[in-house]
Length: 106
Image 1 (spheres, rainbow, N blue to C red):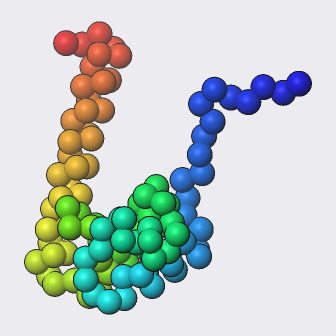
Image 2: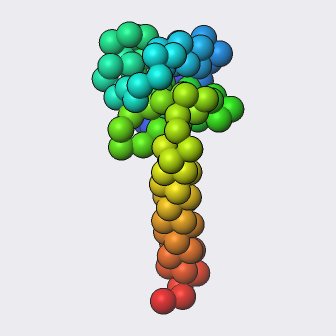
């Protein structure tokens, strides 16, 4: 008998049809929260995030939800980019902290 792994890896890559569904749901030009996108597309939160990440820059996200980059203002795009850069910097800082603990550097 084959035992399943305790922590099974879930597929995180978005399928092309999921990206298309997300993009189509945002064609109205408004910010949409994940819950609204779920109702329209049938995608779950994880699938929406994966589709946005795999959208090749077509979708921005933030506190207001998701929006098509092509329909966003320059200010909205700048805010999304700044927020993502801040998140990336926070993650880099955490990586350094973890590596210091790993190597016994305090």
